[in-house]
Length: 319
Image 1 (cartoon, one colour):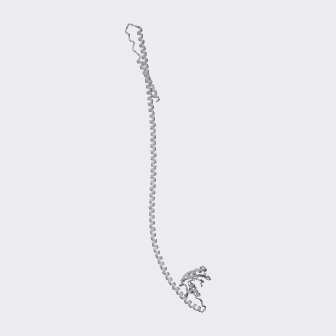
Image 2 (spheres, helix red, strand yellow):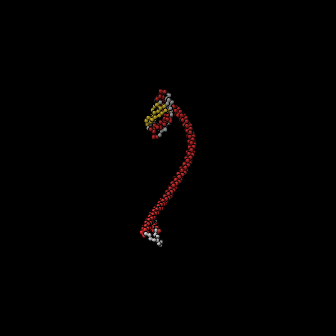
């Protein structure tokens, strides 16, 4: 660019000099002096004055021409200067525009690169988000399938359990019904046996009472005549004898005794029996014997019988 500016300045100066030289040559008269006609000299002073005037006029014209040429040269120089300045300004503008264009190009390229990078990053981000969404959806689908399978399995197990429970319930009902039937049968058999045993026991007790009455009738008839036993002592002996008949004694009870309180109904039925004192084992065994007897002999005389409604009796096992 610097060489180009120097060349333009050189051409402009050379052109200016050529123009000035041309103008000067235009004012020089190269023609040979013409032969003046022979005229009579009228007045030398007049002729000289005219010649001087011409010379002066030509000098003025030459000066004017030089001045105009100089002005033209200056104008040309100024024009060249302006053109040079305009050319420089244009060059600078072109250079500035070029630089600006280069900057814009670089900026556009940078922006394009950034746009492409941003698009790549956005695409990568969207791809990652899509992959994560797909992964989350797959996990959710797998979880849903697993939960569905678990629900189906749980439902299946629940149905199987329900069927099993229902079968067990039906079986339990059948077993319970069978058990109830058997228990009812056993209870009926036991009740029948109890009634039969009770009837047999009543017959045995009645027979025992009759036998005791017969035995004691003979013994106490002789005793009344001989010892005059009181009616109370007689019935206590009868009661003790009946208890002894129902008493299952053991060898280790020998030498031990028990005192019981017995309460009887009007017909001799045993209403209650309690231990007063004595060996616990002997007392328990004696209580069972009293309850087993169920009824005890009681006097027919109401006055004497009243003493047997609630009385104490001491029992000793006999071997």
